[in-house]
Amino acid sequence: MRKWWVVLVALAAVLMAAPADARPVGAAERTTAAALGRLTIPAINVNAGIIPVGVTRGGQLAIGHSVRDVYRWRSGVLPGQPGSAVLAGHTWSKGPGVFDNLGRLTAGDRVAVGANRFKVTRVRRVTGMSPASVSELFTDRGPARLVLLTCGDRNNTTGVYRTRIIVEAKKLRAQADRHPTVG
Image (cartoon, rainbow, N blue to C red; front, side, top):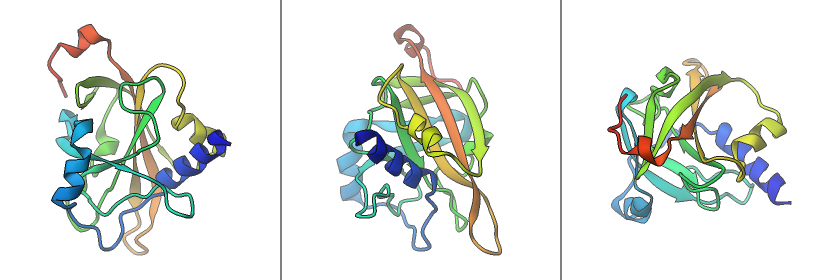
């Protein structure tokens, strides 16, 4: 049962898009997220807060309106724990979105979440994913890894995003964590 719930939540995250009324998040929401640390990606100048969220009544990830922060399923794996920690963020057609340049990352780029350091291993654009593929993104098994998700390839006529950008990164060993993050 848990696996199907995770698949449903994962599918919702992959299908997200910035709402028309997207806005910066308020101070109260930022305070709640402070314990997780921040997401930093020097290669694309990201320095974002991480906001834990639940799911909607329809079973979708309850992505908020902030275009400057990223969202983490509060019942999911934390960054640095075994399994996949998934962070979803908006691209935004009306200004800078936190993940506007996510698709420009390449294998080897560094990502940090709080004290945890990761190295990008895969960047891809997808137009559709099977439930099994989505389930793999949200696993709570295996080595610690980070999955970053956003929308891509916006059709300016319809406002619909045609693809999803998925970045996967593996956690670096403690010794590698001591070196400065390089983009």
